[in-house]
Image 1: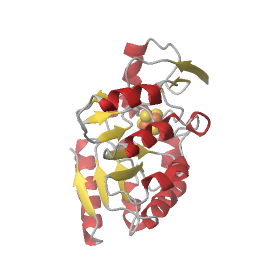
Image 2: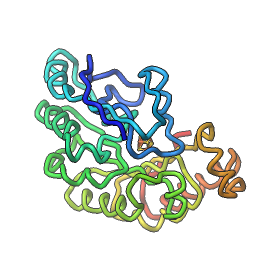
Image 3: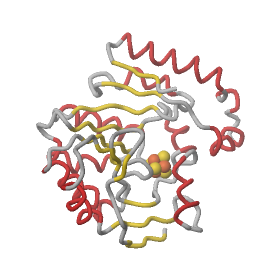
Length: 247
Ligand code: SF4
């Protein structure tokens, strides 16, 4: 893993998903096979494979302090093209320091991660109805998870993190995106751990080789995806969990 400390020019960016996005890192140690964020390499000039480099934006908190004072408030997505709680965050705490600034200014925040490290910051979220924390969980089968997300936390760890956050009074959601084979097994395991569920499709562009290599072709394609997503949404509905399809 090649880690560089870098100085970025700005940190609070406009987003199409929420009002703003903050990406404390460039690159992601989780190296998910389907990760769309690898498109970033076209702009950053990194030659290493996706997952083998991370730039740490060490001046992000200083920039955020300045930018937040001259920007109209809005919901901030943390993060869009990296995992804000990837392992390096344990050392660098760039995400945590940025979140502290956003909380201090009372801005709404949507956190999205695959890491239980988010629990470290649970005290920051306590008592806020403007902060929501989402864990991405794409399948209910640990073998499938290992094929597609080899460096990320286990399914069990992520669901446990959701449960702890929810019990602590934080608004939580699960992002089933991309929906992978055996995602239907998740329906029974998220009860009383999440406020809502989001489901999105797989972009086969990057990860179709994983399906082929592991004889999973019968589980890919638009038809099977639509069918499984609707079944899963219905299963959550039966449990009284709000579920939104994003495709
Ligand atoms: S955790 Fe998210 S940003 Fe990181 S590699 Fe996986 S999909 Fe990409």
